[in-house]
Image (cartoon, rainbow, N blue to C red; front, side):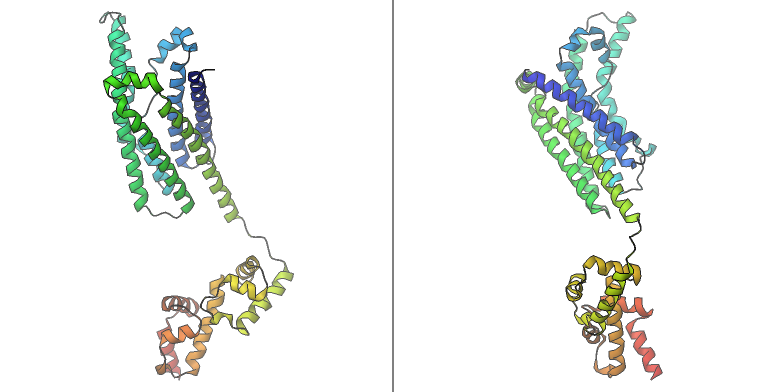
Length: 377
């Protein structure tokens, strides 16, 4: 098989993969709205690959009627890709985003993609109506010339929307860091493609180099990356949602109950670590240090605290620190010490952390508590 044959087959495989992935993303139940935008984007790339496969293949010449009819079907539709990319990014980072009729002006430029089909319809209609002579050559030349220069606004549109997407993610408030990483990868892939397309486009739109470029490399430099895009975007985009759904199910599932034997072993060890060994006085105390001290696995400590004591690790430790602060207030001459010094002696590593923990435990600020103690004295 010749290289052109391999290239044509590659385009066909890419198109088929694109149709499959766009169908899975668009029609699968309970998929987020952003997946439908990605599905349409992949579908447009797939139809462009199919178009090139058709017109690079010899079998189309054996079906003249089909070849004729395809002149009226827009298979290369590029102008909506930029807006779809941009709105996919927005919907990926903002789950509340929905595409509405207010966004329709972004897609008005699609008219640029269907001008060749309109020219073909005008010519055929004119011939059938007796307005034009049955002489297709000037019309075909007009379509070919238009297709060359139409790539300029297509490239500019994609580039502008990639830029707008980057600007959006630079200011967006994002809670899902994993999805943000995927969006950045998504945009980098398109940025690389835009660079490849630009390198190809510069000589392509210069009349004296157009035919030479096509004779030398045809459309390989642009369309092979498109096939890669189909596989990458389809598989990665589909898996991202699948991973999010799995994580959401795990988060929603209730934790397995802890056996009483483990609770009976863990609780006394944790109490001893705090009440006798006073680990809470270490301002750098964390779950790992308590695990090392008690010999309990960190997961067991977290589970016991969360399920049995209904406290987080920080809440558990800070209760002892707040109690230590109260004890120091009762035992010392308050005017001789600052709140900050007493908080540090109780195991806190900063004043804001201490104040927040104290209010959570007592419902009042440290100063309010000390004033109440003075009144009671």
